[in-house]
Amino acid sequence: MIRVCPSCGAKNRVPPSRLHKHPKCGRCGEPLVFDAPVEVGEAEFDALVSEASIPVLVDFWAPWCGPCRAVAPELARLAKEKAGKVLVAKVNTDQAPRVARRFDITGIPALLLFRNGNVVERVSGAMPAAAIAQRFGL
Image (cartoon, rainbow, N blue to C red; front, top):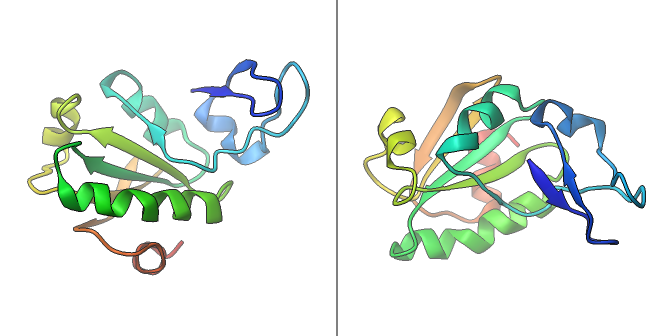
């Protein structure tokens, strides 16, 4: 994954397997905090969920979906509150239909929690950040 340093603007490659090690910018040494949802496409999805050293909560969504837009700020809040403990990722089902099909996504928003590459919990529908955290045990 590529993360832009909020302090100096340098692009940093962060392997998913090192997310738990609190990565730092290679240029300025400032912490690289994953405190916002990360957009994930078909090319990087498998590596992210299978190699991530922390749980990955994946939001399957589409830009035309009203409930998806309603849950987006809740997921952003959750990503900020749980930074370093869980990575919130977003998969646009219009741009990554094969990934959505693999996980039988028939309604969106659909939230799946991955640990070590395996789905451990799933839920469909929009809900507040607190309810998401409680449902997934975050």
